[in-house]
Image (tube, rainbow, N blue to C red; front, side, top):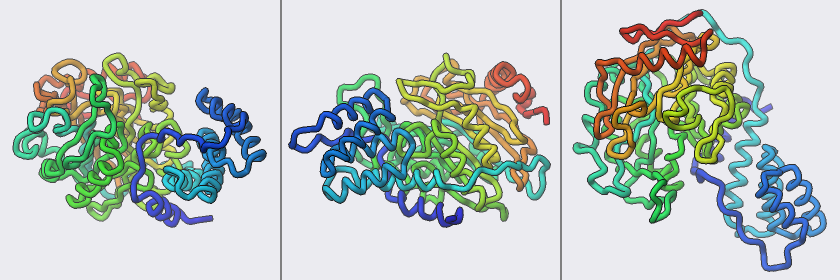
Length: 458
């Protein structure tokens, strides 16, 4: 069996060049007459019936072994059934028949990575419950978009390259051993929008100039999640630009397949794994896939941070329902099952984001799960003035070297009229967290004291 280190290295090598965020439009069939089995199989795929599609398309390639289009679609049928090894074989046949077939090499690589994860070692069963070793402190925040020049030009950007965006909250990040946030949007200069149509009024795409990395450096940020629905707003080029900017600033990142972070602080190794619902990254709808990746990273580090972008969005979706959630027609995961599976696999703290509102926190097997840290910054872009979307926080967490939760504290924040976070003396986040945690997790939910200190039942 391939070792954990070898498999992770293979994943990084396979996918280090970057992947698209969504599955591409399938290429048109070759000019020859299309067999009826192939067309029926394609229709079954469109209808979401992958089993029938696989059967029909298998018959099609058996009858017409040189039908490249049928092999391509058979690969998608296998992909939809999570049979990634079979998808690789189908797409290898496509490449043999037509080496110029659009996207076949890229999606072969992606299927190879997912097949490798499916072949990973089983997740761990034992989780330490008593703290031992050094204390490592974390400061974490949610969805962070530092301004965009895509539609508004310079009007959409903060002065001073974003220095001062986080005024009053910087000390929380600078004093932590590890500072984390979810970077909601690419860092790039001049790249075109790859997400929204020119006349779209309900599609959001962002582009923050790379010089705004200085604001993250000023914050002394250590880790950033790139697994979210805006990471690919500018396509692969945007993702590559973001990674290059963070690398130049020595900020660790996790997102697309093969992209995970390992840093060392005070002699303790900390790993970051991130997931969301898009095609670029470990998927929140596949807890087993995420768990296997966490287990592999856990074998290399002392503490694993798991970040997920999942759950439905908005004020009507503040609660954790305990089932798969839907947003804009997309499955956004059963985040409770996902987070707990992540802890079972080796995650030591879980930072959720994506709903754009705060959600409950619980302690599960001695590990803190924050189901949504809410919005942290949406400069002149998010509609967060007041209300639930404008309530924010910085979460301070102390973990023992073996990952056991030692202490935690909420530092309330609120977004101002321009979508920048500021300390909130009213402590609104505390009130919301107590309400949500008691309602959603009556046995394992946290209790936040008036000073922000988090208490829980061991």
